Amino acid sequence: MTTAPQTQLDRDAILATVGRLVVEIAGDEILLASGPITLATSFNGDLELESIEFVALAEKLQEHYGTAVDFVGWISSKELDAIIALTVGELVEFIATCRS
Amino acid sequence: MPVVAIAGRDVHVQDLGRGAPVAMVHGLVIGSLASWFFTAAPVLAREHRVRMYDLRGHGKSAPAATGYDTRTLAGDLDAVTAELAGPFDVVGHSWGALVALRFAMLHPERVRRLAIVEAPLPPSRAFEMAAFVAADDQLPQRLLDALPASLRDAVAGGSRQAQRLLASVDQLVHHSSLLADVRAEPDPPDDALAAIGAPTLLAYGTRSACAPAGARLAAAIPGARLQMFDGGHYLHLDAKDALAGAIAEHLRG
View 1: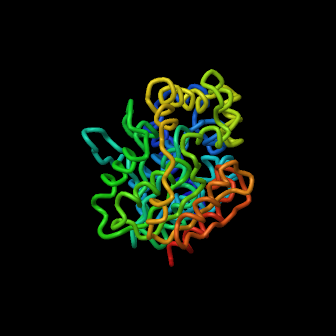
View 2: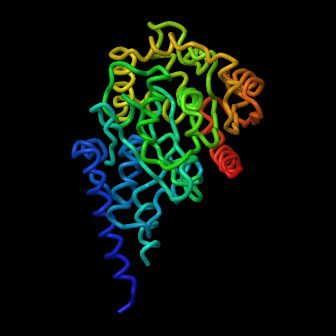
């Protein structure tokens, strides 16, 4: 057994968690315009989260994953353009890397 | 969501990091604690306990019909930092910087160091200097014109973000005393500024209409240091890393 399938399971679980947290913050209706949340979904362009909702996401990620996942530190190290273009997939990859 | 109740009204607070405490205050109308949360706060949080909060009527704090003058908002800052032990540093942007100055005048014993980013003077002309408004009837368009490019694009697209931003702006502009409070705000007298004892960094943008205020404050506050950054009024975005680094260095003393 290689580690690859396990890693894929982990990423699937993280994607599901991120999707659930986004809906908790912004409500079901956020999916009406964006469609289901996938790795390619962008937080700004597709979901159109407000910056204060992004703070709420940071808070929920911290509650869920603990301090091992330093979302705020990771975001703040990025250029503004990269933050604006951030996708769910990039966040999932970051969380997976923190947990491996 | 962590909240502190001030006079029965919920104020949304967020803390980052550990160490000597810093309070950060955001600007009016389009500001929220997110202005600092994803910009300078994580840098300061490497050495400090950073406390941020949404001003009344902003972000996730409860709506408020009145109390946007710097004296009332400095009272809110006092309440929101009541649990911080000893003197702490205060960082403010725009109107939040005026609140920081007022707080330092009212409670000098509570302030260790000050970082003032783009405080507009005279305060009553704040919105004109932030390129916001010349007349009430033109407010929405002028306000949109003054937004950072990323937000402006969203607003132009008539998007979810735009709708929520416009709802928040409408609430503050048409259903609160915010504009009247700004226009009635007195200029801080030079002798009050001269009494500020906290070491003060004044950060202004080379392309900001507020820049002359930096020169005035530098002359009035003893030992204050004026530092110019490449950018406009939204320096925490325009000069994100440079500003965060300069504030961290200033607070290190």
